Length: 419
Ligand code: RAT
Ligand code: ZN
Image: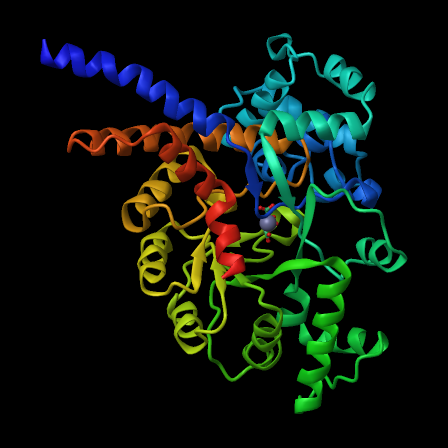
């Protein structure tokens, strides 16, 4: 009798938690989407969904055409090949394939017909404005963080000319070329009027890099600075990356009260022939992150790591340093199995003081599936955790659960930024 009662009282409770998690608005703290003012930089629609680099990599497991021949094709022709290889010739059960179908289904399209031309026709009738509203609504987004690079030749002129901004989009200043390719970036900065020297780096160079960062922080109203880092990243180290971080990036972030987001663990261009799809991952020595958090307590750091094997260590680091905010299941870790594992690790070690997910969407429509899939897993974990509390006699109330979910979906992150 007791068990039956416990079971029946659990069902409405689980439903309520699920409902809160599925409907609480999300602040998506890292994407590759753009404010529509950037025109063609904001990708959307079925062909862009199909040529997503996650799917390109998967399709080459089956395709036997030379890489160059694939890249020479038009986008719809590439999409046709990927559709054939990954959706028609085999069942689309990988996470990235499933994502396309979750998205189409949520939009009300009949995926069982397997009718790509009909899907294309449906998209052709949409305008970007109405479609953006629809995606934001279906994904339940409150804000979308962009990845903004002054080093991108298409993006930079838009900022320089000035734009009327959509206030759903906020900026993150991405600085990979500055920190990782100094020898080619220094001449660029010099051309843009900053007095930097590529070979020797006197204090004046670091001051000028700070001036560059301040100019762009102001121009785009950046909320944080961000870099992805190779798996062998070390700090401190006798190299220009380390010096630039210590003498330019960190003082800049302190002065402007901005977090510095590090994303270590990527091995760029493991197979260059796959282009954007050719990056791999590796284990990082997180001592570097520890050194940063411990050595610069006045700075705020954000981190997400690519290797599964680094996830536990990252949680432990976050327990030690309140100037570290961990976020997202990044890229190859954004698969249900690892989202479940990593989110459990984090909840059990950190409670609610982290951000479980970001979408990393490159194509607008992807926010629909990335958030739907992640929300389901997060809901399941929270149901279990609140149920475990209930067994002690501690019943989380609806307002408490709503507060907790708001924290996980951007509240904790925004508080961290304001600290
Ligand atoms: O997840 C991705 O789409 C990757 O290509 C990367 O963009 C990664 O997220 C990054 O920000 O470097
Ligand atoms: Zn990214």
